[in-house]
Image 1 (tube, rainbow, N blue to C red):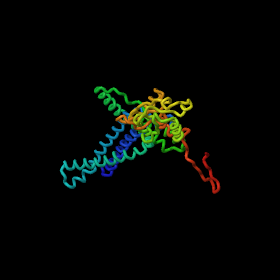
Image 2: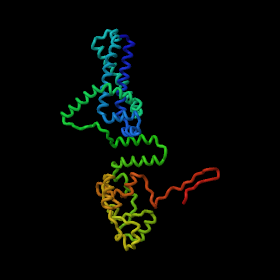
Image 3: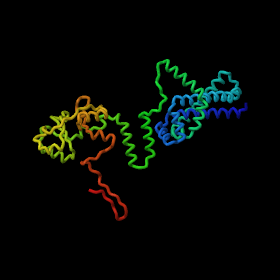
Image 4: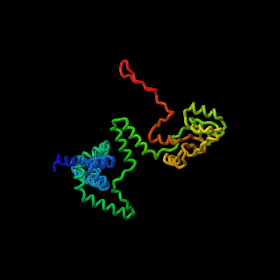
Length: 351
């Protein structure tokens, strides 16, 4: 066999090895939700990829088998290609074998592993769509070997007590986050961006804890229990808040809060209009906080640190804003804006 033929066969086998390695990482890195949504639209390539989504173990096995076949062929031909050049230097057989191994391994790692995996994972869904038909043909050709390997591996797993079936299309939180992050790149309108942000916040809400959304201790607006009603009334006016925290002796001893609407009942003292608060730790999750507010029918909680001191306060509104973003109430004021639309015309925000 001529050197040119050996070189050509070596390059082809190396190319196939790179293809199988790249397709494996592209499949693992792809957005399964995007594939299923495209499948619902009737896209031909998405139908093929959705079929692979339903049999992930079979697809990965087919890629690994194809990669191993390509590497065996590559090793066979590259050793024949470089051996004559090594014999010129009268190396013994052990040295020749060592050089052949190092030389072939270098090219496999660089051109059949690192580079294709780095390139194919940049845009995995587009790559899979482009090669979907080729992948299906390769999958059919390798199916007999793949079936034997998968069934054998399942038998071994059953022997060791693992009966879990993993060949079902299912989506995890990471899949949803990946799809949302990709969707952000294609946004056109501000409203759409806001909707995606709400969806993203809802997914990450389970990671929110009280410390993340509380009003910190140094920003708490509060009064002592023995202050007079005029002080309370003036604080409502000055702060613009509808709720004022009430404490005894110091801020570490919060005993409740008062609502501005309670003043219409003509109370005689702050104590007579006091509403109790919940005490929660800094580490309590947002989901449990929301459940606590609903179960106890309360809207304010005091967040305490590990020593029992007040870290901050938390309202139902603070929790909701973690999902829906900033919520404007009657006390919030938007910034005054203006825009020049021509040399002598301006548009001002209303007062």
